[in-house]
Image (tube, rainbow over all chains, first blue to last red; front, side, top):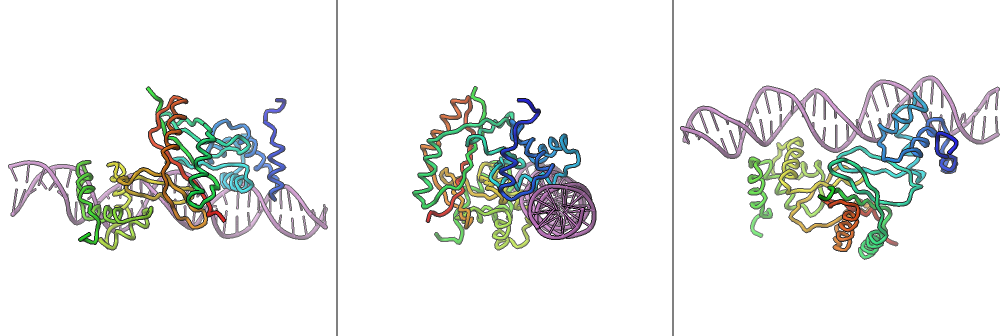
Length: 141
Length: 141
DNA sequence: AAGATTAATGATAGTCATTCGCAAACAAAG
DNA sequence: CTTTGTTTGCGAATGACTATCATTAATCTT
């Protein structure tokens, strides 16, 4: 990679296409998200975005996240007893294992489960718009 | 049934066994939970409990719920963008479908999914302590 | 059954994440 | 480069929930 940032041109274009203006603050948040390997919450995003734009306000981070969510570019995760965390959607779909002891989050994916979910919903007359599957676990001895 | 309430003696005994004192307020909340066919939140529990005990405070409802949770008698559900909802645990285990349009909650259960969850966790070196599976759905046309 | 002990209650203030309101700053359009 | 309509930053407001504390009441002691 030749820049300190991953390429975010695609995302910037997508944001614009969704009818939002491109501002330095939004680019900063986009970069932070592009670099994040973890699942940061708003306070963390704000902290990291301030490196690129020291005067960005937390309200703007909230508003940017809302815009990105609306544009379908970011997903929100509300794990138990914690503030909302976010991640890009350009990754493959996956669910989460939360380690109850360390708080660490592991991603996994299962087509079988997805399929069963759709079948169950259909049987009850529903279409699944999105779902949330979290396994709160402990390392096995 | 010969009383206006379902029998809550079991629950009262369990609460006491868990080291909590039995008060009129706690009995009121227990009755409300025993009668609830839905998944009420704290405001709703408070409203309903006030019928039996008009001076019960919302703080007490919060504390009672916390006690019941601690005693393993009640589960908390934190669905997206809503306040926590509660239900008794003496029902069979189940997961939830949330109707995005009406907010209605439907229960379902799938052994296949449970089994797959355990397998996936095991493969990653974990034991599932508890999980959360929510399908956010829309009625199919 | 009366008093001592200690937990529970009600009212209210406090916290924390998130949202709102508004004037000033800025992106996009002409 | 001016106009128009967003977006920003700040602080105030909200909403769910927790803590505080004096008072009340459940359980224990005798």
